[in-house]
Each structure stands twice: as C-alpha cells, then as structure tokens.
Length: 348
Image 1 (cartoon, rainbow, N blue to C red):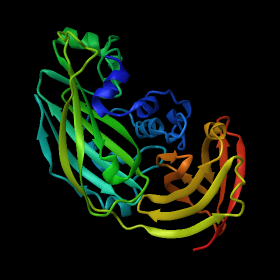
Image 2: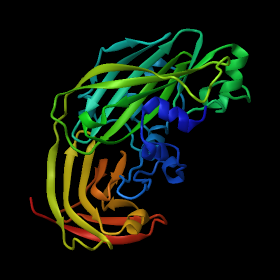
Image 3: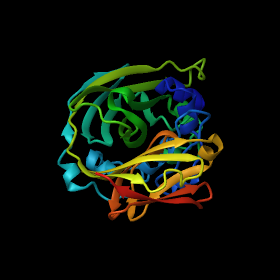
C-alpha cells in the first residue's frame, strides 16, 4: 500500500492535493512558514505539506495529558498558544464507533483565519493505530518501537492489523484554503490527531459542521493491499468564531510592482492567534506564478500555514510583530531572492 493510494482512500482528494501531500519540502521541514507547492494552470498554489511538517515539529510523546489542543498547538517555531486564544478552546463530546475502533472530538478552536481540532482514536488489541503519513515500509523507530524493521514486518510478526487513521474537516463549510495534520501516539492502540485548517473566507459563526474520521485497515492476510477499503465516520462539531479586530485596509502604491502580477487590496487583521494577512493577487503569466515562492511582511513573522492562490488571495496567519503605518511586502522566488518589494498605503 503506497502513500498515494492510501491518501486517495483516506481523503477522497483530487490529484492536486495528492501532489501537495507527498512532494518533499526541505524548507518546510526546518519550520519555515510560507512554503508553496506549485500546481498546473489555474490551480491553487498552496503548501499543505509545509503546514503538516510545521505541525509535526514536536517529537512523539507518550503521555495522554500532553495531547490537549493547547499543548499540541505549541512548538519551538511559534511558542505557546496565546492566552487570549487558549480561553476560546471549546470542549466537544461527539463520539463514533468503527469496526474495532472508536473516535471522539476532544477540543476545537476557531477564529476568522484558523480552525484547530483534536481527535482521539483508540482501537482494540488486534490493531496498531498509525497515522496516514505512514506506509507499510515506514521504519518502526518513527512510532516509538524498537528494532530495525518496518511496520509491515512488525504487523506480520505480532499478528496485528495496521489501522491507518486520519481526520478531515469540511473545506466548503469552513472556507478552508488548506489543512495539515499532526499525529501523536499515546500507545500502539491510541492516537491523537491534531488538525489545523487555514480559512480563505469566513463562514457564518457559529458553524455546525463535521469532522470526518477515515480509517484503512491492513492485515498480513490481506490479499489486495493496494486497494484498501476505508471506513468513514462523521463527528458533528459546533465552532464558535472568536473575535478578530481589523488592523487596516491597504492598497499597493504600484499594483504592478510585482512583475507579471496585479496586486489588489491588503487586509490585516488581529486574531487571537496573531496577525492575519489577506492580499488580493492576480497572475498575468503562469511562468511567473510558478517562480513565486512566498512573501514576507516586513516586521512580522508568520508562524501558521500560508497559501498563495495566484488568481485569488495570499493568506498568511498567526503573525507576530509590527508592520507600521505603511506595510512593505517582499516577494521571494525559489532561491529566496527578492523579486519585488512593494509598499502599501492605508485607505481604511
């Protein structure tokens, strides 16, 4: 069972998301936000993989009390969750049963730009619960198991069934632009999934929606390991959006300062998790779009996921710092060279 097939079974995502999820990203692994994966013509440029890798900075832990939303949010890159945001965490109670496994939504957080969810998964002793970013040939060391073998070999030796589990949020209902997952195993039969979604547009709050838990079982006796049959279970959740404060509406001094692009309004907002940036952007040349890596707002460091839709919006969140009265944005290429430096003027 390879990762692409597993991803299709678990997420029902189209080819652009499969490409996102399994393209190696060196910069993202170092915790640098703003990594973008370029797709084909008229497709959204996003960096869901970078988000997933940023979320995975923490080492695997083995104590259940470490797996609260507040604790899972924190990492060396962005530090602890701000107290203002932590106060908005909501406990959830939805539970569901699968074939020999159970899942429950533990906690959620929502603001104008970010959705956070934790899901607890447990299974009976015949299973080994593993994350969706694993495959049959993943080494045991990545799951706190001793030895030099793979998950496939361990399952055969122990007579266990591997249960690959992931969690998906409703992109349409929540206006999500991208999402990443982090997985923490408390034991071989227990795992907490941390999901962080970046919102492209705000849905009405409160939001009645679902978190879908998807599980694919593989046992050593499976005859067709490349065609997994997934189980899907929906967990209802209600999200109440935390208050955000507008910091200003700006326009570029020169809308065409970024070659082969047209820049529009820049909106900066203070959310409980930090500064959020939304910039209207339109590409005039597909090659220029493929050459664009990311952007930097002078004086602000973004610690959340970031996305650039070359025919929509650039969205970056969880920023810390100060941008002054006239924000300046630098646009970088894949060699991290500055393509353009654009000043913005406040209009509201």
